[in-house]
Length: 292
Image (cartoon, rainbow, N blue to C red; front, side, top):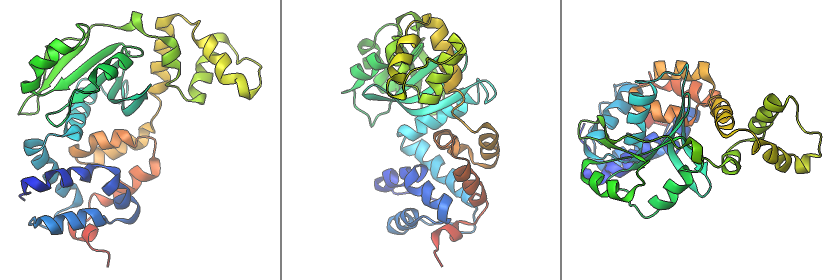
């Protein structure tokens, strides 16, 4: 299968909700069907959806290394390669103030990976890094060989710098240093959901404050900020690691192509969607291109 260069960004959207939501719910993607038709790509429609997705991804990682390719390499090589789902979890597009962290891996600590592919600018980099320094232990930027030297001079010395080479292997230019002592608990608290911050407060103090719901968030925040910094960070890592349906995620990753690992982590709480997609992987390509 050959994809024309001008259609690579369009095929890059295959690994996004635009295609996957419809594929999961209806077993069909109008967008994918249209892009395949308009691009003139010659497709073996007898192949399974699983193999078809792998074929598309293989072309993308060789010719169009956009953000998703980086996320997927991190998911496969670091999350599953160096850690495991038993002791680590990966979050994508995790909101930190006005920024969104591309990838966060939580194991015994918190590590963020900011992606700067050849298609990304450095305009918001300074803001992003300073946001991450407020809540993460280790901060990394992962980029191309050609951009690494420039980034090395732009980043604080505590921030790690990684390179994704042309063979899709991650190498370290500079190792990240622990930032745990600089974390701001008031900012870290704001990354939590109600069930998460109330659990931390209850476990640390023994009970929740008896206050009206209208002021619970504020009172819990005050209490949270009084917890020793390293203890608070450890508790946050613990509750964030549970943002997943572990059993279904493991089943999904067993059934899914390697190209879907990063996408799986973005829907790891959505049991129904994961189960629907599992059912689609062994279908023929023809079936997801045809509404009749």
